[in-house]
Length: 132
Image 1 (spheres, rainbow, N blue to C red):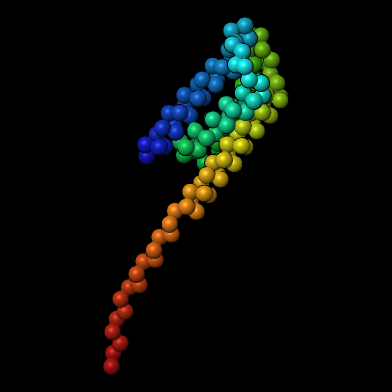
Image 2: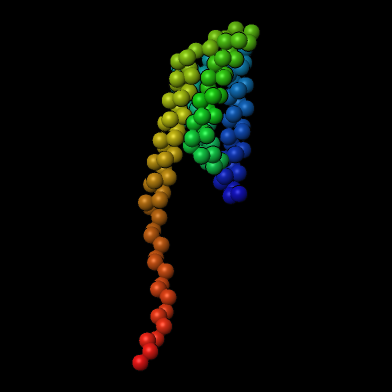
């Protein structure tokens, strides 16, 4: 495993735990971040997506997992006695963050492949001498 992938995994884990704590903190204990709630949701899931890609998670399972996480945290906010309510628009903002993250990661991957110099072709194997 490369150091970059290890860093991505650690970052993904830290962001996942931090976001879960944030999403399930009782309403009375929440600090005002000074940013619109929907923007904060999108940025959180953008960061989760980029760190997941860096960790080596393939896009389809990453999209599915983060979509389930987005819906799950909203359901938990609605069901748990936190003084909070689940909001479908929050889950939608989460999904926007995931999609933007996947688009950015795909674009970065495409650009990095184009920027790499082409590998020189392997030399042709020597021909056997023709009989005379």
